[in-house]
Image (cartoon, rainbow, N blue to C red):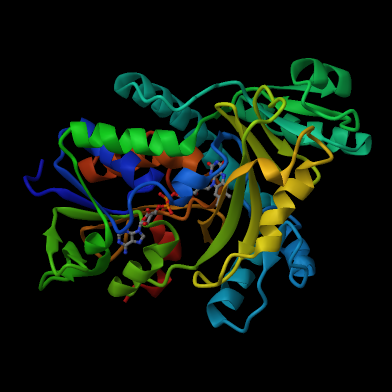
Amino acid sequence: MSKQPIVIVGGGIVGLSTAYELSERGHDVIVLDREMIHDSASCGNAGMLSIGHPPLTRPGVSVRGLKWMLDPTSPLYIRPRLDPGLISWLWTFHQHCNQGHLNRCMVTLCQMGWRSLDRFERTIDAESIDCGYRRTGWLDVVLHEENMDAAEAEAAMLAPHGFTHERLDGAALRAMSPCFTDEVAGAVLHKDSANIDPRAYTKGLARALERRGVRVLTGPAWDATGLERDGTGRVTGVVCANGTVVSGAAVVLAAGVWSTGLAVDVGLDLPMQGARGYHVQLDGMPGVPATACVLHETFIAVTPMGGRLRLAGTLEISPLDAPPMPRRLAMLADGARAYLRGIDESRASEHWSGWRPCLADGMPAIGWVPGVEGLMLATGHAMLGMTLGPVTGELVADLIDGRRPSIDLSMVEPARLAAAVA
Ligand SMILES: Cc1cc2nc3c(=O)[nH]c(=O)nc-3n(C[C@H](O)[C@H](O)[C@H](O)COP(=O)(O)OP(=O)(O)OC[C@H]3O[C@@H](n4cnc5c(N)ncnc54)[C@H](O)[C@@H]3O)c2cc1C
């Protein structure tokens, strides 16, 4: 094992989980994050550890996305602009919205999902992280009776991957969770998933790392502004905004959607777009669902966190410097009202928006950057980063240790994106 530390850029769920795995294996680790760990996507997400969830690249999604392009109140909104990066991303995305690609993705994502839940449970136990983890499944809540069969068919497609489900009619659903309105037709319970308060987990993990002697350096001084390379081109460290060069045996780029900026330093043009989402948190609800839900017709995620309810969702592909859109935030309460009693903006205690890192083929990038020694990618987890963070950490640690990973990584290896490496 090298005496030099492993340097991780990004203290979201992916970076912190990677740091945890590496420190467990005896590596010296440094995590750099330009912000305090409380506001990233890894804190503001819906907290659904929805293993078996498909990627964004599904048959029909690209065509539907283009139709929705001009409607800022559609669930998937692409802010129209003449940006060659966006146009190329959309074209690649479209080419991957087919059944064959989806089938291949699902094999990898399902294997990763099962493994990730094991890692969550192990870490929560070992570090006594109080984060409301509950393996109670998630409910696909259906307003209109005519959509029940389609919701059940989606769940049934996961059976070959080991997933189980149960169809509930409206009465059975309300017996479980009286907070649902009488208009709701029923739900499909995906039994194997879990949910969590993501901010509590992420902060708990950061504290556990500090107890283990991992240096978690946060704040503007630790903004990574470039990569240091030696005469052979090997990446040997990270240049920070305070002028320090943090040297390491390897650098892991886990900076979410911002990973693209540093990848460019080694000539890697990642096909990445940020997909913004929002959450509103409601306090003092008259009742909350027994477990996390997705509202079938409006795609809004609803997660009980303590006595509070987090409504999260909407997908907006915009430039990273574009201001948040208040009317998309308002879509959350508007889209939940028909399903749940007591949805009222006056109960809102928190409004938030953040970015999902979306690669054009819908899959994350996990592995060494080909042709660039010393640089590992761990990014692009899109809608599934909270779910897949822990297993990503394990896979990265395997690769750093030269061990054969427990999962076939061909669908996530950076080589598929690396045509642009100089
Ligand atoms: C509304 C919404 C709901 C979601 N719901 C779910 C869900 O229910 N389940 C699920 O699995 N996923 C969900 N996701 C997706 C999930 O949140 C993301 O995939 C995940 O958080 C990405 O984690 P990350 O560690 O890659 O990136 P991030 O959480 O974005 O962390 C990256 C970190 O890198 C730091 N950074 C960036 N650039 C630099 C730099 N140059 N120098 C130093 N630090 C830097 C940033 O400050 C940040 O802290 C949701 C996302 C959104 C927006």
